[in-house]
Length: 242
Image 1 (cartoon, helix red, strand yellow):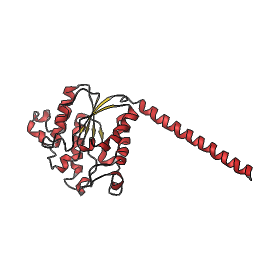
Image 2 (cartoon, rainbow, N blue to C red):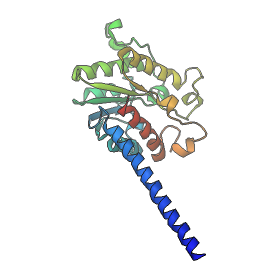
Image 3 (cartoon, rainbow, N blue to C red):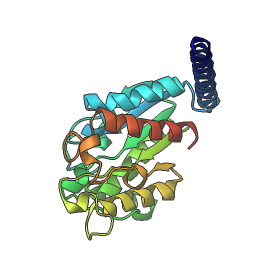
Image 4 (cartoon, helix red, strand yellow):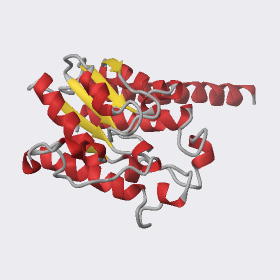
C-alpha cells in the first residue's frame, strides 16, 4: 500500500513538473513574439484625459513596458478632450510634445459628457481650408492633433485608442441609442480612416458591460486596476501587431 501511494505521489510530482514546463515554454513563446514586433523598444507619447493618466492606468502601461520594452511619456490631463473647449485639450497637450517614435491619442469620455459638438470628419482639414472655428468640435480637435504631430515629426507613427464604455448614463454604453457615446466613437474612427491611422476600438472590443462593470470599474467612467490590466493586454497586443 505504501509503495502504491509513493508511486502515485511521484507521478503527481512528475505531472506537475511537466505541466509547469509547458506553461513556462508557452510564456517564453509569447514573450518572444512580442519582442519580434517592429514597435519593440520604441519611445511613446500618450495624450488623453483622466482615463489615460489616473494611477490605475499605470497597470496597463506596465504591460506595454514588460511586453514591448516601451519608454512611455504621458501628457494626459484629467478633464481633457479633443474639443478646444474641453479642459486642457489634447490639442494643447500635443503642442507641448517632443519627438517620439509613437504617438497615442487615447480618447476619453469628456467630449461626450461635456456635450461638445461631434463635428464632421472634414473639420480643420484641407477640405475647409483648416478652419480654426472647427477646433471646438471633437473631429476638428482630432484632425488638429494628427496634423500637428506630423508637422513635429514627419516620420511619426500615430495610433488611436477610442473611448471606452462609460456607465454614467445609457448613452455611455448602449451603441444603438441616439446621440450616445457611439456617435463620438464613430466620428473618431472616420477621422482616423481619412488619415490611415490604425484604431483600437476599445468601445466595442474592450469587453466591458453592465454585468462585469463592478469587477472592472471603480466608478461609472474610470476602470480599476483589474480593468486596466484587462485593457492593457489588449492594448499591448494591438501595439505589437497593429
